[in-house]
Length: 544
Image (cartoon, rainbow, N blue to C red; front, side, top):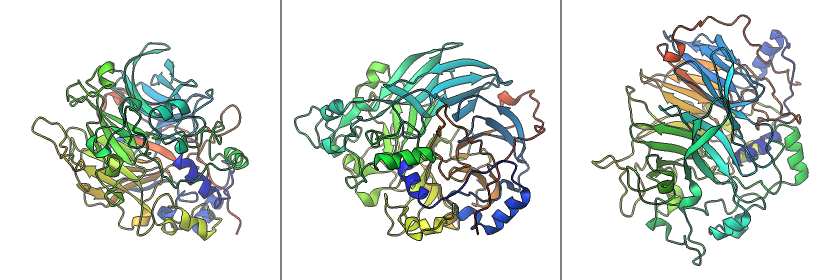
């Protein structure tokens, strides 16, 4: 829901207008000369698009899917689209299998409840030639897959999903009654899906946040306890006590019309999304799952070697803690072992283990989206922009004051590989072991979506998602390759509203995936550039 508030604030500034793809190149060049510095724009609306820089001698490939479209693109490092998969549904995330098939997490158009961005509900598999061979729906008024998924080595799929808890269930779990939305709460869970072709799937494992709650508000509840004494449990009362109330219904309707939020958002469910888990990763060697939980400004690791029954308890599994958190990092005040000064993560995305054979293998990478600069503190990150009163959809990042970073984390471990947990201190490390930020800090800022991947040569491939900007930095932090997504397909749901909250972020990109030229999915494939290439979107000139 914080993403929706971000979009609401920016909507007061934007005034950007859709324009037809046939806008002339001369218009585009004029717009570029008018704009602010490209990389210092929050939206990058008038930035130069396509390939910007290429100092690589590389035959690798990138897979991406513009947030406002239905297509998934495979691209070479020259910025040429080599292959395209299309569907009638919007795509949130996609992965290539070793056989060349593509699995996509798509937005089901027909579910009534969940409205916080990242909604999906469908997993589909397509052959290289685009034939759909599997379609699995996990969307109802009780649950919904969202944001991200990962394919396990056995072919099963781990996916993040919301589940609905009524206000009564929230009260019973010790949630502060003053911070329960009328529609209830939407905590997250993880499901493992065994595909059943051509339609369907079996849920063979499940982990629920709701099974591992603690609270220090109501002594009459069974899960009452001192937070610091139970660092592996999840405090149900993590929220901003001074957070803004839902906007009026009329304003929500205006946001829906403007593509800022999806049509099922309303006053009653505005604060239902309490965790908004936006990334999942799997480590087969450890049998562990990593989750990015921006609602808590933390990353969590849970044990996937448990049975479903064990995952609901604090016993069992390879690591002996059942479904309790094996590790958490980023905001230790959530479990009573730190204060505001100890918070490191701010609405982070894309936690992942660095793969074997790659510098830093086994460590964790995290995209830290919204780091406060100076005296600026969340949730007021956009206060400076609001005061600027600019009509420019390229509002300068420097006016906001926040910035993004990519962190490498080396969790301290014991001799048996378990994560070290001091008796009365937070999980380490106290600060990231390594961090990338731009030399000009304000040239790298994406307040939502985004991600980063460490490549085998030690370079870092970054997706600054708000602008749809992909760039690669070498081990000295120098940009050696850069590309800005030029595609905006303006996909709409059947009711004419936006599938994902886009607002002024026309070129937004959730993430980009990297595939080496030796990846089995690409063996024997024709990888010539498509002719013609997909049609880029050219923004209309602003009024001078």
